[in-house]
Amino acid sequence: MKRRLPAFLASPSPVVFVVLAAMAVRAWLLFRTQYVPGINGAYYLVQARSLLERGALAIPDLPLTFHLHAALAWMLAKLTPLAQADAIVWAVKLCDALLPPLVAWPVFVLVRRWARSRGQGDLVPVAAAVLSCVPATMFRAVGDVQKNSLALVWLALLALTLREWLESPTPRRALALLGALLLLGTTHVGVLGAGLVLAAAVLAAFAARVRGSAAWRRMLPWMGAGALLLALTAALVSWRFDPARVHRLAVAFTSPGRFAFDGGQAAIRLGSARFVARWVAFLALAAAAAPALAIAWRRRKELAASDFALVAGAALAVLAMAAPVFSMDKSIRFWEIALLPANLVVAFSVLHLATPWRRRALVALALLAGVGGTAASLPRGGADSLSEPALRELAGLARHVPRPDRTLLVAPHGAEWWSAWLLRTRVAQPEALRPDDWRRYDAVLFLEVKAGLQVNPFAGGSPPPAPSSPSAAVPPGAEVLHDGAMLRLERVAAPPRRAR
Image (tube, rainbow, N blue to C red):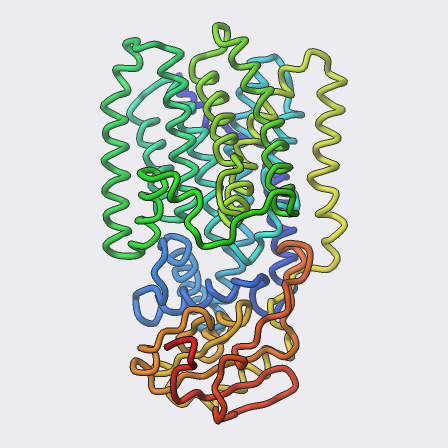
């Protein structure tokens, strides 16, 4: 007698085409550029090179994404004629093209389970898979926030494995769930926080649904094991990789008010554009979550406890992440993460529409809204944050940096990681300077980008504001090392007044 695979390992064949299409589109955007698109694209190049050359990250961060880049770059350098630098560029692009679209797989499998229980086909599951990896909200992150994009795969896997474990808490399913948490814990701290909120909300909903039954008591040891694993992961990451991010996550759960608005941004004025955007985003996500929450509550007795818990918990997590109580910078990040669980609960709601034509109409509208904007922008391809002429001029500045390891280069946002990649210096933004930097380094150089700073067309729509010139902070008498068509480089012998 043949053994059947668990439901979450069943072959999701229709979604293969969705994943391949998303991979192709991401590859188109990534390989249209000389390096990596996005304001922070070169950050991943710098981190992978540091792992290959020094065995450690250049900047403290959660490690998994960069280790994948470095491992693939090492293989490419060994197996192909590519030089190490070119192998790193190829590895970073390949990982960002091939890995994030995998988010469609757990989304499809999960929504398909709901569709089958309703006696429906794959229309809604395929649409949910498409909307998890193809719309412009995903492509804005191409090349730029690769950790976040990869972590969304683990977040979708967490939702799937959590539902499967609640349905049947076997050791294999428990290990799969713990594995999803471990992957989140080593990839992106923000999505990890969202995953913990999701898991807590789902478990709370499940506890309310089963009211302390024997099934709930059997899960308690596994929950304890999960908490221990998370604690050990946090301790390892804090000790070995990035204590600052682990500390911020701890603050988010131990002092939510302090985390929600940490004073790093100006208050949002009543009636301002940011105030309106904040409430529009909240109402839109609330409109996505509320119907699913209402359906789950109304049908709580006929729904499987695992399905009730996941839908109710995901809807509550969306509302928590969309709440207009965070600073604008945090809100934008949470909105983008919340789109994944919002996609799941909307799919659940659509599956409960009574008439097929309404389901088809809503699916068509959602696909038109989610994919239409992406298709219109594809012909432009991606773009580096610095134009190719500016990058060539920047690479030529290496002659002014005889000791990169003993040089700090101050550059505006959008140019700092390209400077680190091409010149191998340590970099800083002007506002991060400290007087001690002049004692720690042999030379402190200021870079002004006079032209050529641009934005990835998928990285937010409108171009960034004109960069404030670091040279404005340079005292009179600074030595001008280079003054070209696009860049100006100066050596500063002493701290500017505002850095003292």
